[in-house]
Figure 1 (tube, helix red, strand yellow):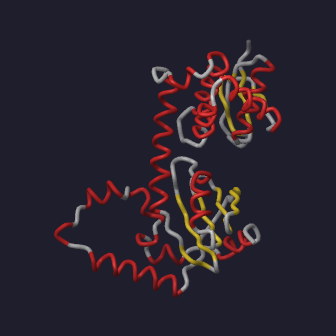
Figure 2 (cartoon, rainbow, N blue to C red; figure 1 turned 180 degrees about the horizontal axis):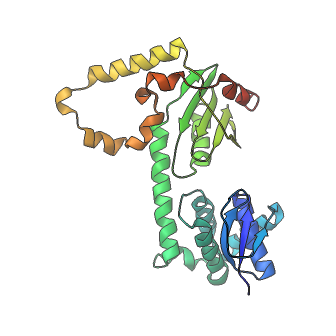
Figure 3 (cartoon, one colour; figure 1 turned 45 degrees about the vertical axis):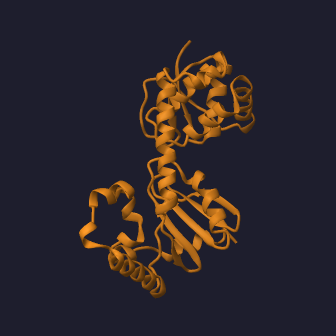
Length: 266
């Protein structure tokens, strides 16, 4: 059987469609690439168009052969930044169809061990971000930015949509170039190539100064422990937190970018 390189749109449904095509055409994939990936390959290429019905057949079949837990693991693992993620998930899905649910309990399997560790790291990042995301009030919206390693925005969406259900929320993921738009308990995630927060208003700046003043007032100089602070608040999160932003950073942005999101959350 000749191996091929599958190119698809980067969605989980597209990936499952590739799995379906692999079974139907009896062609094991050598690698997976996104449609817009400029990388070259030595393998014959096949462009796979996402087919929801085919993806659903794979999803349902996997649920019957294994368990709902294993299927959820595969769906969540697709959100991780695991290197060579697609090939690892493909091999595990194949094993799931061939061997049943025991694959999910086989932590001696290198692929399953990598997925388990990747999921642990993703959930840790998700938990951190729930506490460190900072929103600014701009033109009637609560607007924030994150720069995660994993694609955690779909996991954060239900949390912030419920917690801030009385507000209109925009949360932008710089890494994956997508944004959460939420109003009430309704939310959607849309791709956004270029996003800039508008400049903070005077009231917003006043609240920021008040928070910094409170922090500095209650701090005990003799007990300042930068190492401990970094443990509880890793430095990689700080550049998108309002209390660490420099004044010049706050002045950057195009109000029109926020304006474009208004129609999506009315």
